Length: 161
Image (tube, one colour):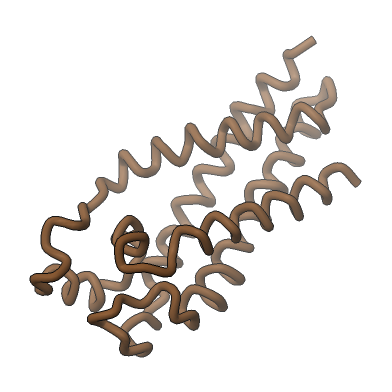
């Protein structure tokens, strides 16, 4: 029951963070790396957006996300932990991968690709935002990240007294 509550709560929080991080060109530019190459190329060639975005190194983004979600999953794990690594690992894997699937299916493929909030005022054409490649690549990286977090945090939680 606690696991279900944690998952639902995290999914709601994650969606709200994504929702609040969009809606204006300035906010959307902070998520520049999430946009399809077609949109990124248009942003790069736009005089209006020059100097207002930065390209993120994927390794650095992975490390920062790892630290953030390690903390989040570890805190969730404190409420469901047992003195059994397999239990802790599986529970943390379920939380992380459910959040990952929610991010891909609900946020990225259903909401993000269809909402006007993520579109730039100079690039309003919906078809430019439809390529799911970046979202699927992100899902793959997050899959690995959540498994690593589940192993490390699961081990630490198992050894906490």
